[in-house]
Length: 309
Image 1 (cartoon, rainbow, N blue to C red):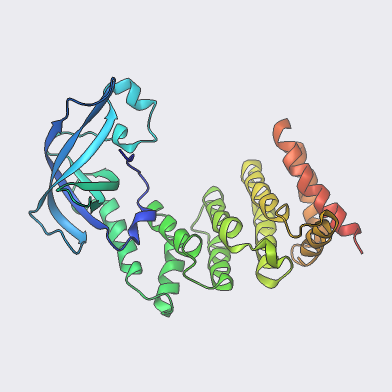
Image 2 (cartoon, rainbow, N blue to C red; image 1 turned 90 degrees about the horizontal axis):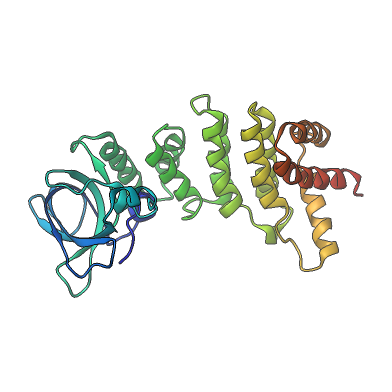
């Protein structure tokens, strides 16, 4: 049986997904569960529909669940979110689900407990769904995604990051500009700003293009964020993401790979190379021994680029 996720974001854009608030009206345990495992069906009454082509308020659905039977064991198996939820009659859940083919059951992809239909999590989901309805080429989509990045609401922010990164709804340059803008916002704490690095490194950075404006902008943005941060742990987080980019494979030939790496680093004009090198040297002294090697590798790459013709 698939595990339950606590992360709604990947499911929001699924065309077959139904997103609802439901009340648990019954829990039916099955006797065929394995040792130490509780398995069954939840009967859920739909009390508020946020998005669905199939469900309406008042409908009742059966949702399979599986979790560890022992309460303490559940705490050690939190990766399956069923282990974290109170599955008692009367409890409310915000749930994203879809019908299981050739059955009368519904598969829950993600769910979490809420206190009421106007719970803050429900409100945040409505914000995400409102943005989802806007076409990607509509300027309002860009404006609202940009606002979502600095919303200080976890679900809304990570929905926006998913739009820019994994889903690539916007041109790379536009996505980078939105992320860079969020990094300049005083609304976000420095530690929260590190989340902006994930879509940059994982989706917007394209090693096969090596030295080109967006790749250069990504390296410059990360380096600038590192310099602006005060906390060594935050600085180190930026070093890790920088390393993921500059140590990607730019060419099959090792020599050419190093040439392109150096060219990419040298293409960054702000922050200046020497200023960034001094930041890395200072950071190396302030991190744990295990982390010093990571910083040192990035430092060596910048030093090599400074010496390259």
